[in-house]
Amino acid sequence: MGVVLGTFSVHTKQVDYRRRDKIDDELEMTMVCHRPEGLEQLEAQTNFTKRELQILYRGFKNECPSGVVNEETFKHIYAQFFPHGDASTYAHYLFNAFDTTSNGSIKFEEFVMGLSTLLRGTLRDKLEWTFHLYDINNDGYINREEMTEIVRAIYDMMGKYTYPALKGDVPKQHVDAFFQKMDKNKNGVVTLEEFVVACQEDEMMMRSMQLFENVM
Ligand SMILES: [Ca+2]
Ligand SMILES: [Ca+2]
Image 1 (tube, rainbow, N blue to C red):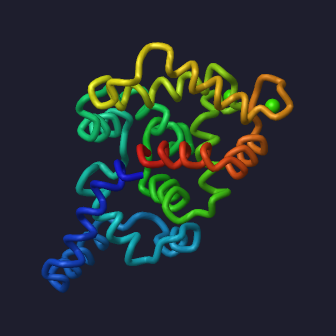
Image 2 (cartoon, helix red, strand yellow; image 1 turned 180 degrees about the horizontal axis):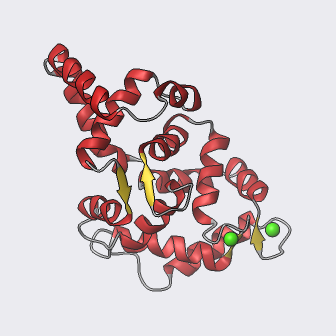
């Protein structure tokens, strides 16, 4: 999660440590001008406080003055964090996972809903979110092609220079290992339940999941 959040944690620190009152005033002004719909409702729907939502909103507006994130912006932000790799494919899938209305842009509301799950959700919530990220065609199953796509995208993002040990056929080995453990009934697809069970019962798998979490 460090990546998307990196941008926002900076703003949080600024608000925490620098001229709090002045920035609070400024924040209030910003909120008056660009108040997202139903902040109270968002507070109820997420695991963030109203103040946290205000701070997140300020960061969001700084990065995306138009009030929505499009895929290009998302890719641009990701590229900065992975200068040695090609993050565009992974950013594409991640964008789709945040864009719950599938209209090609992420509103603040969608952004904080995703963030709330990934940062403050239960383990089950996080695993469900990750499952939907991997289920590219959204049919309720992760098939081998989807898993291959995602693993390859992560490897591309990390880049050959960062991880020189990663070579050509490693993604396939990784996918085979995932599938062997997750596809309990050996029918060639992984359901949400298979995914959750496999992640929870296997410490290695969980560690690997957390590795992936770090790049979200
Ligand atoms: Ca699928
Ligand atoms: Ca299965």
